[in-house]
Length: 208
Image 1 (cartoon, one colour):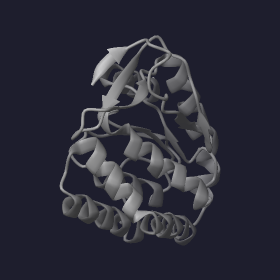
Image 2 (tube, rainbow, N blue to C red; image 1 turned 180 degrees about the horizontal axis):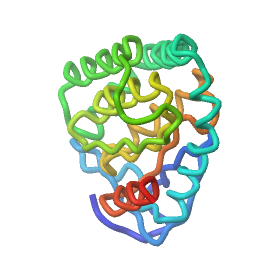
Image 3 (cartoon, helix red, strand yellow; image 1 turned 60 degrees about the horizontal axis):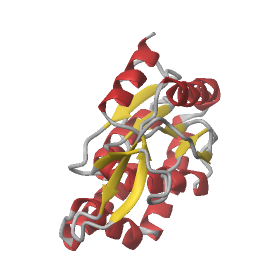
Image 4 (tube, helix red, strand yellow; image 1 turned 90 degrees about the vertical axis):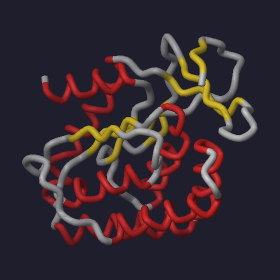
């Protein structure tokens, strides 16, 4: 993983804001590589305050309507998301292997656990429903660490801004892209890319 400003390098990974992919040009990128072969995979933009503000605004705008949904309706969206994830389980397992170097069996088990997280969400206890929340996680379990946090938060009525570890951002982007196939309302789940500084900006904007 190296910092780069090379515009002719690997493809840039988009953000996901208000239900759509969003390409952005930032002052820097992190170049991620295949954990096994070392081949350059993609460039992850290091989002700053402007990009984060757009995701926070989308989550804030979507919050009232999402909070007004019944828990059963919100779980139905999670069930649809789980079904899509199960449908593309092999793709996600391959992404996990590529980005982390895990054994295939471990990657497949992580995908199965993530599907179960979405299907059996339990209410979280993270503030008043309708409040946008940030979810930041590391590369150890790039898929299941996300679903374990986001499923209960969504069921409880929160909208989300996700910030994955840069080296496993491909897994995270693929997950949020599936949210559109599950017809989650636009703005309920958003994703920004970046490193530690992006996470700090996100937390500061939500607290401000």
